[in-house]
Image 1 (cartoon, rainbow, N blue to C red):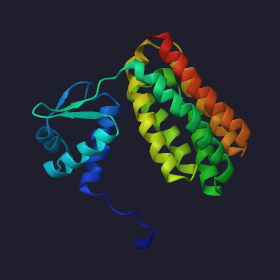
Image 2: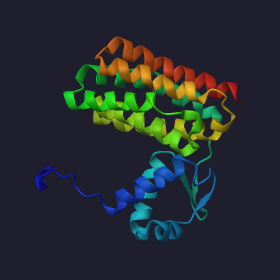
Image 3: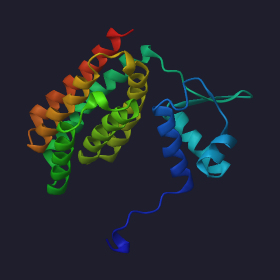
Image 4: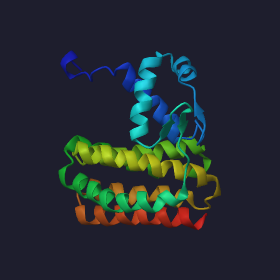
Length: 218
């Protein structure tokens, strides 16, 4: 890779944003926990200014909330939000899957094929919770990226993050979480086969099944 082909280095604020976002999504920072920006800065080996900038972005993402004179807190995971989140994802996830099947290039199709091969070869029941969740996030983010619309990608990442927090809360109570994750295999195969109608249908069913699974545990 030449210097011109290298990805630009992330700013300190972007590094802080991604690292803190990951902790919030995976519930490493538990819901409703007070956030100490100084302690976060030390743990990330990043200055407090980038951390504060990151927290402002995360407030827009509805992952943190700030109160005057009280401080900043991780937002609660409220199951009543699921209906709103699912409503958005039910419309946009199928669009992203369809677009991915329509516009994916040769390299992207190869990448998706490798994801399918990897998924077919893993024993989800033997994986740790964080591994499962990161796999789920990776698959969804790959589809969003391959869809080729950065605005659609940004929107879906935001709502998938919120859905993933709910998933993390209830994962230990799910009896068939592996079947939910394995739904990715058929969806990825439809995209790899460039079947937009099928990819769209499977993406819609995937979101619907997630919504039903979460509601059944309440």
